[in-house]
Picture (tube, one colour):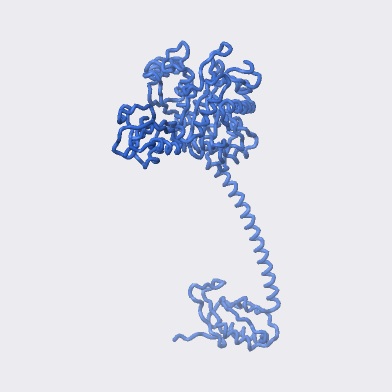
Length: 601
């Protein structure tokens, strides 16, 4: 066994591997603290001065707490211990001796410790203060970064140009950028709606940006778009520009006249955004009274808006031409778009005319979309397929709007605020709305609603085709008036309320005839009442020859009224509905109803 080296009974050991002394001396020893304590206890209670540093390696000692009854070591005894320890360590070739801090227990040592403690406390407080400043700067940097990321996340750089043009389109203060930023970064909020949950938007189309156009301030295109933001359905219909109405105010043409004059009479198309906005609000009141529906918002667009909208969604849209002429449509008044040179004309107008489209789907550019929206078979122009003039134009305008919405859904331009606002930047001088800066969150809802609506299921109304309007002469002018009489809009109110707010079943308005093929008297009447209780228009007709089935349901509409067919089937034990021609009805039944029901054995 290896013998340990000792000094006056104190065992000296080398430092354990991995332990480094405070003075980085590899020749370090550890004192057996229990042996050291025994030697100190042999000293007297006289105060001891701090021993001078002697050349010895760093010695790590954990001094146990001295009991209160222990006497203070005698200075002479302590000095003898120091001399013996120093001499012995020199013999062992140990370079340096240093008392550990735990052994310093004199008054001077306490004062020094207190000074060191105060200095350490000051350093600690200074360090904490610096840390607080660093945290505060970090918070500020994070806040700035958050704002930047919010703007980048929306993909919008709010230049002064964008803010200025946004505040032309909606009511806001261009000098307060934070109102616009707050609206863009805030969550979407629901659109204003009527009691049935419908949001109705009045859209005017003008030619005020066409310098050579006579009557550019007239609203030759008037359309209503009705949305349900919960059901995600949409309707659109146009209002005849020549409808004769009372203005309720003095206008250049008098107190009554064509409806397309009213917007400019109220101060619209003035070039002043505030005046245009007030004219739109006044127009909302007039059109709400005429149509019998609440209109929440209004907008005025011109040629530039239409072109920019088509270009924004990719430059091409798909429209469906459905003309009463088997050839489609033609209006030669737009041939100036073909170009000036022969090569340009051959490239753009291979058929010889710019606006010449067959029935069916066509992919068209912005110029073609504008021409189609304006075409009505102008006088002196070679044309066909536009025999109803303005009424055909209104249907084509709806087809163009469908095409824009459908392409916007595919491209994501009008469904993303980050791509929509740059488009708004270019429309500042050409688009007016009744939206306010506080409505930006509602505009976001409108944009987000677009991809949720199935464009192919948007329903259109032709009010003239429904027989609600007729042509007439008023003050020796050819105009349009309600079929119920001039200024009598009651039938229009009734039609729109039913069409916009009724259930799909009620909108189909199907007629149902019920026949009894049993020996039980009154079965046809009983089943007719059963169907009527399901909100169906059913009538008991009479008896017919027996059939080998409990019920037989015949659909004579070609499947165009599916909700009625489903309702009849559910009411009659889920009996399948057969779609047949009227000539195929059994038992030689001759009936002009939409559905025929036979009650069998």
